Image (tube, rainbow, N blue to C red; front, side, top):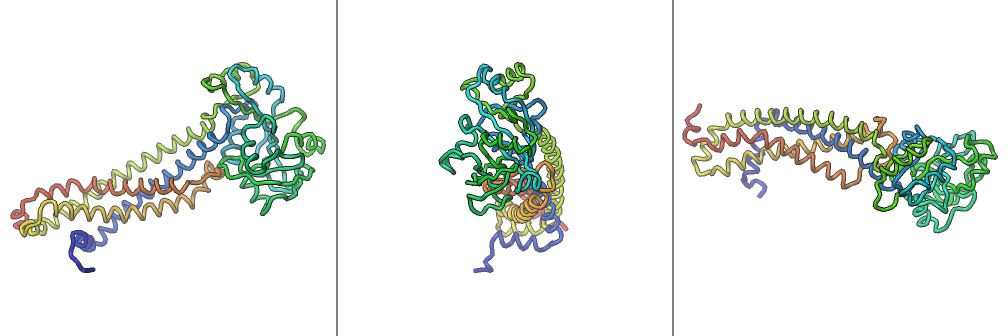
Length: 398
């Protein structure tokens, strides 16, 4: 049964006749698919991270001190540890802007291992539990109560950095002992590397003198816009009325990264297109040579009863076998390249989100279909010529 003759087994035998030529075509398709998979993985990871951060922020507007937009995005998107401050009285001015439905605020404190704290460099986020709508939903699920003074809850990455195996661990933050009472689920945002405390702890931290923050200072105001209103319009009104702040609509978070990503996408796209064109020409050249070599063979097949469809199927099977093997190697190579090089790119180094299983499968399928499609496109003309070949003329050709 294993030696049964089929068009597929004949196609495989035909490919084995010229192993070098078959190998070259497989390598060419593999390199093309590898470049495509790497490019798609790279851009998809960054785009996905920005979208997740935007969706999970829980606010329509992010309001920060003038000139601090980039720093705020570094905290949210890239897990960088930064601090910036503005006067707390700006909160009341924001509330007066038409279209604002709800506001809350956060204060960012940066730890310094060995100087103020016994934890690695970490972002400490102090928040108001009465007005908060960003952290509170997670807190309710994990702790089912408010944080008390000298208590903290940590992000998933911070739990690993601090060495938490269990909750209820004591740590010193800015000269004060805090009990770590819970770990938040992974969010895919900068909050994963943070430690959260109630804002009532700020006065003690200021008194210890181990932070640069001053009384009545905050870092970020998070605002919800009334239903039906345009967040961009409200953001513009805030900046027009309060010159000390920058207002960023949720959908604009990561805009600078997106613009950079667009340029990178264009470079990747042009590279893949050029590689695809070269692969099409290579496939056309290879199968043109194959058609010339097998003209007499095809003529004999037709003369003894093979139909046009048999000839077409035979060569398409060869194309599919070559392109499938090349695409599979390309998918493996592109994925490996992405995994090995991802952390070497500054733009991706600190992004906490990775590709989901579904995204990896989708990218692999795209690579597979593109690899097969390129091979088929290149082989169409030679196959069409073989299909139309007259059997007797083919047999007579030397």
